[in-house]
Figure 1 (cartoon, rainbow, N blue to C red):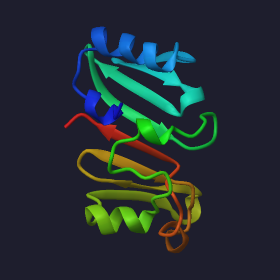
Figure 2 (figure 1 turned 120 degrees about the horizontal axis):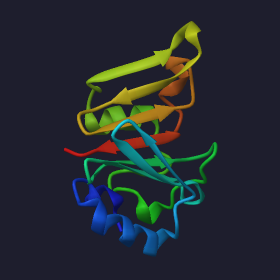
Figure 3 (figure 1 turned 30 degrees about the vertical axis):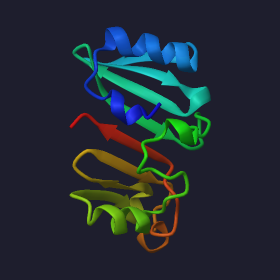
Figure 4 (figure 1 turned 45 degrees about the horizontal axis):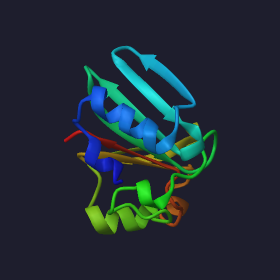
Length: 137
């Protein structure tokens, strides 16, 4: 199941399907109007806003285990680097992090954001992603 395909679908049907596929979420949390179903053991979090799936987060490391390849969108390879994202999708519409502030680098395109656990821009190009969030188009 490509979780990128569930964006925009109703929570009432999608979350039960995910629970059947992934098991119960490890945690459910809310921030404002957005509710997150966190599947730490699967490397995935699903965001729901106003009853519709709004985002899907894929993680590698930290509190989450690595998201299984079969649940990643077709275009997302587990070892894609910052440079490969730019070569594939062109320059991001926004980017940030790095520098003396110690904030990890992030790159944002229209429908997704990539986080890289690196604060040095010169090194980040060769580092694989640590999390990717895809947004409802």
